[in-house]
Image (cartoon, rainbow, N blue to C red; front, side, top):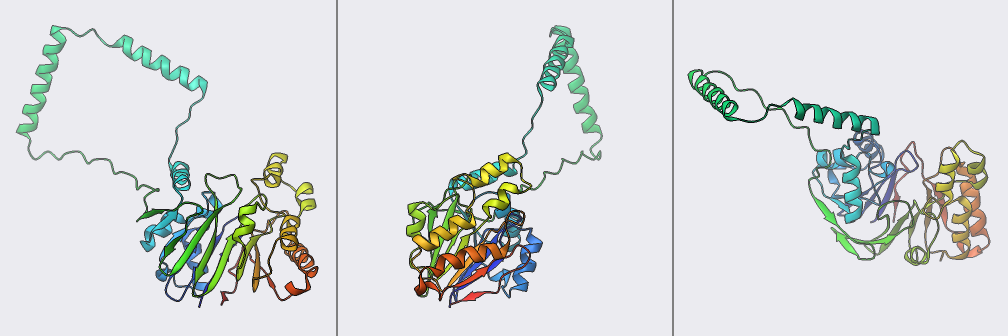
Length: 324
């Protein structure tokens, strides 16, 4: 049996469990560790049975709980190398300063250098005597406690194990074959996935600005398809987002609209899936029934596709497991 359990889908966090009879993989960890564990328990998925975590890309709504969860469960994380590097950079503290702060820093360094005496024999002799005296004092007081070293902060980028894969190159986790494919999104190296096990095929394709030929080809002969239907075009245009964010969402590296998803289902979808799960719906710029209606109208033009069942993944609660 193969199973897909969508724990969460949306701009506030994404995570899905893909299972065979012997292997369980978590795709993305976009909620806190505590919430991911809670969602898995609600859905009847045992966190201790997870074999790996697989990451589509480094945006926060896909990796928020990654480090804590992987360390807690002691399981490997699969990335592309650019995605792993981007995730590490995101978690590494960076110090920035204004131009005025930089000028002040340079001035203080100059004043410190000017106030230092010129090195000479007397200074060297004094330094030697002081050093000798300190050593003798330390020898006379062997019981004097040494100062405790400062405790190092735990490394937020530490993972129990990291495995790299490349788009277009299949690999296996247990008995699940994974085929990653490149998607158009504004991340370092974003991927969608096709999972195969026990004669069934499941695919996950969200966070893509449009449907390029390689994605259309990857989504052939799929039994369960999790596909993005992010926004209604009119709601997005009239919605609360700043114009710069609207432009990003509408771009070719943004997110699929209901219309774009419907056009794919009408023109390029082969009708093989028993279930189509519409995911990554915007809470601000979409309504679940609008997404469902657009997909149903697209399929209605092909009577042979009406047997496909359309489901809506939610942000606030896990979806009932889909079993094949």
